[in-house]
Image 1 (cartoon, rainbow, N blue to C red):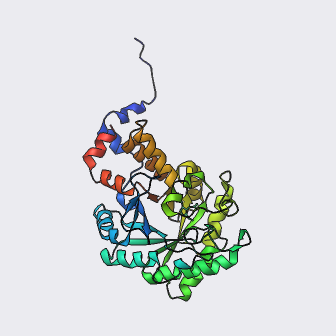
Image 2: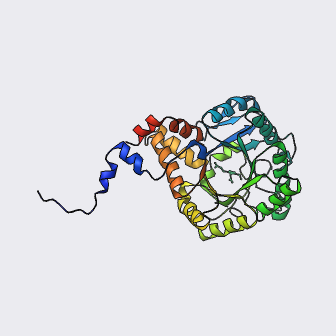
Image 3: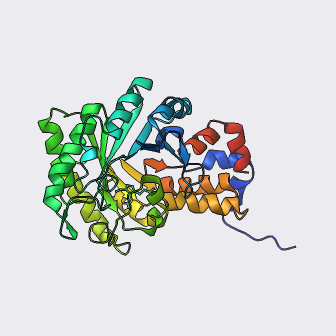
Length: 336
Ligand code: PBG
C-alpha cells in the first residue's frame, strides 16, 4: 500500500471528544443569553403562542415562577414585550406608569433585584395601526415619533429598566432617547440599539406573540432591505455617533455576514444578535417532524451566531440552551 506524504493530517485533532473540546474555537455560555418575554395585560392565565411552540404570553402573575426559572439557569437578562389592553393612534398605553411593561419591570425587580431588565422600545404593539411610530397620513412621522420614543424610554427607566432597546428604526432614535434619558437624570441607563434591523419575513411568528402586525402596508420604508450590507455599517456608525452603548443585528441566521462585518468594523463595541421568531419556529417545527435533531440544530445555530461575532444572543432557545449547557456531560456526548 502506498504511504502518502500528507503534510498535515487535521483529523488528528478530531479523534476524540477530549481533543475536539481542546481545539474548540467557539463556546456558548448561559451568561451570553437574553430571554425574550411577552407579557399580556388582558390574559387571565398564560397562553402558548401557537406559531412559536414552547413560548408563552405571560401574565404578571406568571412572573415569579418564570423569573425564578430564568435566574436558576444562570441567564442574566430578559427582554420585555408588552401586549396592552388598549391600543390607539399614539400608542399611549406604553407611556404611563401603570402600563403593562412598567408594571412588569417593577414586579421583576422585586422578584430578582439583580436580573438585567431590557425594555424593547417601540410602538407597534401599542398603536391601533400596528406601525412602529405615529403616522402622518400613511407614513410614519419620524420626528414626532422621536419625542414619543424618548417618553416611552424614560417611563421604562423610571420603572426600573436597566437597558433600553429601541427597535423602531426611527432615524435619530438613539440621540433622542439618550437626550430624554439624560434630561430625566437617567445617565446610567444603557442603550442597546437595534441599529441593523432588516425588513424580514422571519418576524412572521412574532405577529401572534406580540400582536403588533401592521394593519396596512409593510415596514419596508423604515426597516432595512435584506440585500444591503454596506448600509448596515452606516446604520451602526450613526447609532454609535448618537450614543449607542451596544449594537444589534436582527435577524441572525440569514445575516451572519452582517454580524461579522459589524464586528470587524467596530470590534470594541459589544454586539448583540437576535435569533428571531421565524428562526426559532423553523427549527422547532422541523424537529417536531423528525427532520432534524432539535438540540443539535439549536446548538449549531447558536454557535454559528457566536462564531460570526455576536457577544450576546437574544433567543427563544435561551432557557433550553442554558439547561443543556448546565449539563457538561451531556454536552460532551452531543459533540461526539
Ligand atoms: C417590533 C419588533 C419586532 C420584533 C422585535 N421587535 C417585529 C417587527 O419589527 O416586525 C421581531 C422579533 C421576532 O420575530 O422574534 N418593532
